[in-house]
Structures are given as structure tokens and as C-alpha cells.
Image (cartoon, rainbow, N blue to C red; front, top):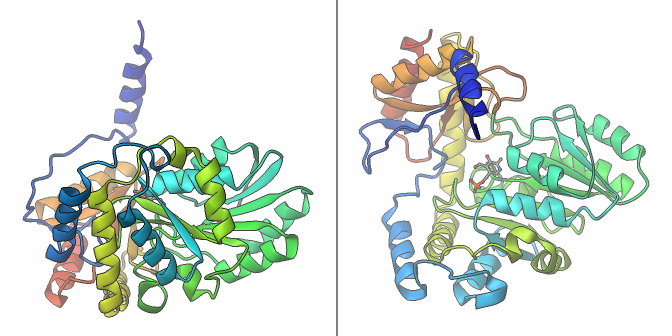
Length: 375
Ligand SMILES: Cc1ncc(COP(=O)(O)O)c(C=O)c1O
């Protein structure tokens, strides 16, 4: 029977504690939220939701087609100009998601015969970009510039090094300066995914590449999502104008995808302007992460030292991770739960995300809840 094989897979997942199901979410939850990626607390900010509504009314609910077919609005152009300027790059191109932006950058910047060097801890969207690219991929050990140098040394043609700036599982930062130096030495391009760095790292939240002094570099391309610190939806690629012009012509997730919805573009633009006005939000998100980490480790929990806003705590098994997260929820706290295949080393984790708008009382409550419910 067609699809009959699915039942066996589902049963296997259930038995290993790896079955995922969707949980309903009310518009207003009574839970204290440390599960979302709304690092700056902007997703429900009236200035941002108001901009989303106004943009939808003015430009329409949807973009109505690929921007190459139905045209490109001034709203998209404005967002691209301001995003590029904020992060210190020559140009930007927005996509309907960060996932699509990563597929675009990786596939379009690795021509036939390329070598792609990918960190073992990279996000699924970068991994999928490598899978779709017409080159050979070499996966290198996590955060290891020497391994990248070795991999590049085995290849003669075009090469692209691909890495998250902040890894989503443990919240640790990539050695960006060392990676850029190795790439330069070998004439390779560097694509870094700053999904968790934009709005959190660098001066006023300008991101990890800016912090590492790589903004505007001719051989560095940065991808971002608009759905985390900017509280909206969508993604973008930032880089030299020649790269962005090439993506318009070669990136399939730009050419064959409906443009970013006006509401999302308007919300992201408003969030970016708010962040420029209130740059202290970025530092506050980092400080909240540090407080969460200190509180959790003081209780003997195996938390990883956060380099940005993600704090992860190791759990003994996938089943216990699920139960731990469920017990937190029962106690009024929403936390993320990462299990295989979302963790490269097979170790399940609770994942807490710091938000700039959390109060001291909320941070204390979150730490106490995670401690009290530990398995
Ligand atoms: C590191 C990283 N890159 C890319 C993405 C994808 O971005 P988006 O949700 O906008 O598709 C995510 C998460 O969603 C992420 O954590």
C-alpha cells in the first residue's frame, strides 16, 4: 500500500522518544516564553505589528508573485537598503524565509566543480544548500579553522566555506576571524548564517560579521533571518553588489518563489528602525542570557556558556528532555526541546532563549522552574 511504510517509521520514532506532534498555541499564552526566538521582544511590539498592518493595507496581503515577474516594491527596496547599511554591507536581497536565503546563497555561490566546506554543527538550511549545490561537500569538525584549511588544501577550483555564526543547538559562536583568514589565504568565499547574531551581537546588534570586522568584505556573504530578533518573517542575503546582482539572476529560491509578503517586509523594516533607535536592546538580550546561564550552572545543570541569546542545557535522554520540557510547561514556563535529528551529537537538550524584555523576576522564575523540574 502506498505510504504504508510510514506507520513503521512512526512507531520507531515513538519508541525512541522522537515522535513530534503539533501543540495548539493560543493568541495570548499565560506561559512565560523562553522558547521563541523573539530575542528583542519585538514580535508583538505595537510599532512592529502596526507597520505590518499598514504595509498589508498599502501593498496587499501577498507579494502576488516572484519580484522578477510582478515587479519589486519600494518597500522591499527600502528594507534592503537599510538592512545592508545597518550591517555594513554594500547590498542586500530579501527572501520569503531565512531558509530560502541560505539555499540561495549556498547554491548560487558554488558553481559546478566547487568544493563546499561545511561545519558539522551547521543549521539544516545550510546543510540542504550544500546538498542542492552542484559541487562536492566536505563536512569538517565543529568550529575548527585548521580542519577548514586542510579541506581547502585538497581542492583547486572555486571553494565556499559555510558556517553558522552562532550555532542554534548550544548557542556557541563560530571562530569567524580565523575562518575568514583561512578563506582569504586559499581564495575561498565565506558564507555565514547570522540568524542568531543579528540584533544580538555586534555594536547595537549589527551582527557577528560586523563584530568580527568582516562587514563589507569582498569575499564574505552574510545571511540573516527576519524572523528572530526582528520579530517578523523572511530572510536576507547581504554582501557585495556583484553577489547580490548574481543572486537575482541565479538563486532559484528568489526567482521561483513569491516575494516576501509586504506585511513581513514592513514589520522587519520597522523593527530595524526601532533597533537603531534603541541599540541597548542587543546588549540586554546578551545580559539576560548570561544571567540565565549563571543561575542554571549554579544549580549544577549542564548549561553551555552562551555567546549570544541561546542557552542550552543538556538532558539525560530524548524521553527525559521531552518530560522536562513538559514539566516546565505545566509549571508555566515554555522552553524549547531539541532532540535527534536536530542535535548533531545525539545529545538532547532544553533550549532557553533570552529576551531583552524579560524582567529580573521572570529570569529568576525561569531558572527556578528549570531547576525544580530537572529529571
Ligand atoms: C541558524 C538558522 N538559520 C536559518 C534558519 C531559518 O530561518 P527562517 O526561520 O527564517 O526560515 C534558522 C531558524 O529558523 C536558524 O536557526
